[in-house]
Length: 415
Image 1 (spheres, rainbow, N blue to C red):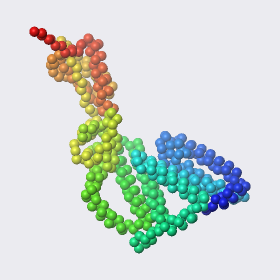
Image 2 (cartoon, rainbow, N blue to C red; image 1 turned 90 degrees about the vertical axis):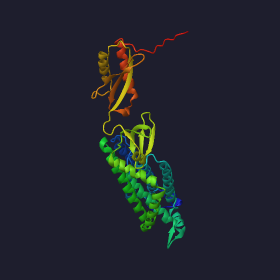
Image 3 (cartoon, rainbow, N blue to C red; image 1 turned 180 degrees about the vertical axis):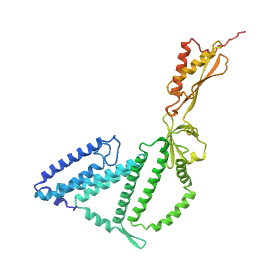
Image 4 (cartoon, rainbow, N blue to C red; image 1 turned 30 degrees about the vertical axis):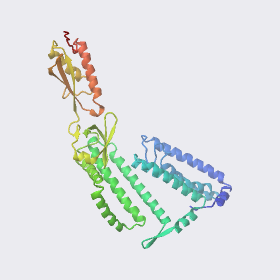
């Protein structure tokens, strides 16, 4: 695809047949839009790299436009016309494809990263800037200018153009590695059972680390950097890990140990350092714990290895809850305790095995203190709501049987 000057473009766009090119481009756009919308409608609405969420916001749409435009460019001379508008829009489709690729891959691989938005803006500016240089015919002059900016680096000469080309190669390879790792991770974690989720998570983390490391080495090799020089960097990195980065390295190692031992799994209800909640994700450096009130805590993995962790779901997810009620001393306890156990057992979420138990806890100053103990199997759904249902059921039972709850009474003697 050759680059033309502004005058050449004005001459090409002024020739006959441009209106037919515009019509052909419109038909191609309509066909591409219908095709990607049809493919996107067959999915369940998840945002992918190729089709995005609605089809036209994915990578497949500009790629299809590139193929259609390229085919029209090759076929257009057969109709007796020289392509002009088709060549003009081809760099636009290429820039759009590059932007869609980088944006979608970064959103899929690093959804919570703050640098994702900045990277997207830089890629967009570079892609559209390259299109403008190509369309206006300034691309060769810009490349020559970048080639003229050079400096000595050791025994070789390095130009700004070679550095930029190496940077582009590094970005392309790393984006490809991120894309492949994101696809493999989504396939591994999709429809996985709860008891198998931790093992799949550690495999996904190892695959991502391996692909990124391999991609980085390949990108550095393409950029012309001697990999033997990395031995010095590896020694310096080892010293840094031994002193300043030992905590960071300990967190990463602890993350793999947790996933390998499966002492903590995604979905477990745990209590760490006074914070209680359900584990929603286990990263290589930290673990995310979500409390029942919606608050989230980011806990370093080293803390989960070196300190005591209460895991309510490790062996048995069932949790024992209790509530108390006081009745008068004149109450017949045997039928009341049996009725309380039956009433509590009928409350939703209360387990039947083991079933509720009513016990006489003590003799209070105002009446007999009864304790009701019952089990639930889903503590991640909250305990206050089921305890409230149990208390309401007990109150309705006491009112139905005409049993009053005594309240404190005191006698005051005045001298």
